[in-house]
Length: 260
Image (cartoon, rainbow, N blue to C red; front, side, top):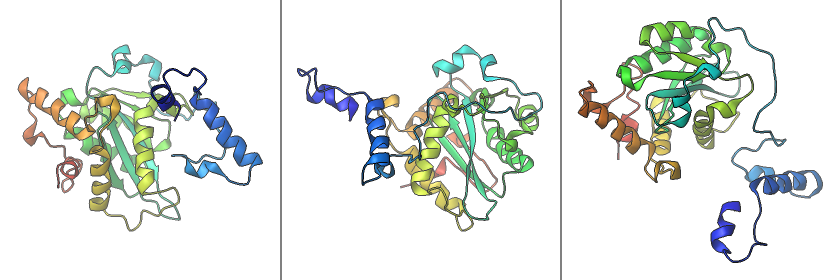
């Protein structure tokens, strides 16, 4: 809404408003008005959160490399092969969750069902995902400080890639993954049990997300941008068998983006 006012009213300087003003109005209406407009937001938080997040205690993770030590080139998104990792938690008493990987340049999403949030289970799933990628397509990864990433050294050593950790309670430093997780939540809202969710159903959700054009990609879809990246690697002589990614012996996350 804030962005459309300028092209809609190019000659009227009074028809301008910042997005923060709109958010402030929505949350003020929730406090004073009869209607709670927060439910219409993509993420209906009860309180408006600051971009910098909140400060919190550091979770001890062995050999934790801070994000400030990450190469500056990663921030520009001009280099491919750097990923952001996270976990989408299910509701109820289930322990099942979704391990997500997002490539920073193409915003390509890989989502895999895992049986629990335990560090060993997460490490095994990520080792399969990254192990199936050519080395030039896995140049690094940025994780949050969840305990499920405590065994990152096993993944780093098996795939020969560095890992970096965002500052505590600073999800904006992994904005691409947070955005893609938010898209998953549109299909699987918070509180949804994952007990009955199958990998095929998750593949379909992933396919829809990866097949949605993005302005940041020049209106390419993440799937198209990923395919272009894989084709460039293949043209450079990098082995990219079939331009596919195998996260498990029976699950091909790229396949869900090429169906139809």
